[in-house]
Length: 96
Image (cartoon, rainbow, N blue to C red; front, side):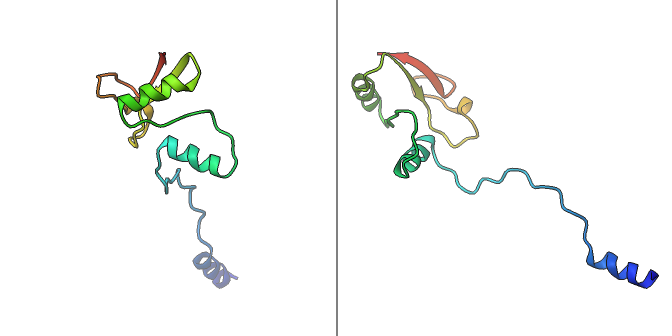
């Protein structure tokens, strides 16, 4: 019996701890929303802008008084985003 227990130990391995979150895909929020919308999954109304003029045009035509602008960065969180104008943090409420 002792011999069979030794053999069992060599076959049975201890359970590994669960690995932490693994990110295999890094895309911007606006890209993920486009992907969700392409498959019919509803998301909040949004529009991406690359220049200040594009952002102004989007805000003017959006039809809402209060808007939120977000810096899109792949740096581990919105707090790391910043704007060329000096705004720190990646999320800001604005009005038209």
